[in-house]
Length: 54
Figure 1 (cartoon, rainbow, N blue to C red):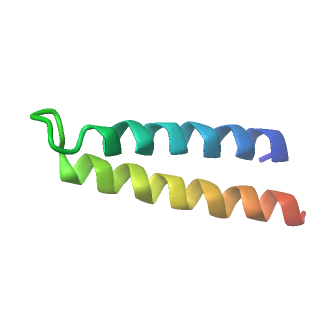
Figure 2: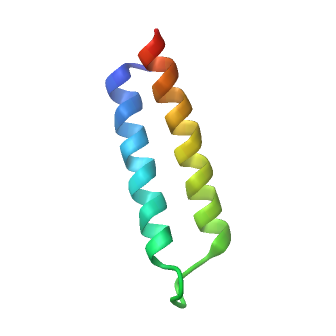
C-alpha cells in the first residue's frame, strides 16, 4: 500500500469515526458501530505509520 493510499484510508476512517461520535445522544447512535469505526481508524493509523517507515 502506498503512502498516499494509507493516508487516504486514514482520513476516511477518521471521518467515519467522527460521524459516529456526533450521533451520540441521538436515536441513530449505535455504540457497536462507533467502536467498529474507532477500531478501523486505529488499524488505518497503524497502516499509515507502516507506510511512512517504508
